Image (cartoon, rainbow, N blue to C red):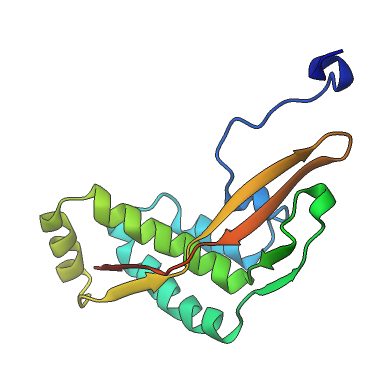
Amino acid sequence: MNEKELFPDYEPKTTPDTIFDYLKTPTTRIFEILDEIGQPSLDKLKIILKYFRKFKKKAEKHPGDTLKGNVSIGADFNQYYPSEEELLVSELGKMLYQLIISNPKEDIKRAKKKYKLEGQMIEYFEIFFRHVDVMGSGRYFYAEKKEPKIGFKI
């Protein structure tokens, strides 16, 4: 008997695991801010930086925690549970990094000048997501905090 016969309704997940998978509730402040920003672009650099700085301070005061995880459903023995602030800082940091690596330096300089932005160092802990399919139980999503901090100049 093969897996398809044992679990006929099983469909493997073929897309990357994201914050939208991890957080099931669309009413969280994180999604309100991400919806407000929309598709990241240099025109949105100022608002992304504004939220990044605001929530970075909050994340430092309200970090996540490592708790005993339920290993039988795919959690780590010591599973990390990030705070909402950490999740948002990570998502905003990823946006900023993508903007920096995907735009010419001259365009970035123009955007910084247009919005009167000073050069600054961006540092954050990246939170990434993974899923585990537990046959007969379901699909579970987990967050992981990547060490060391990501750092780049904008």
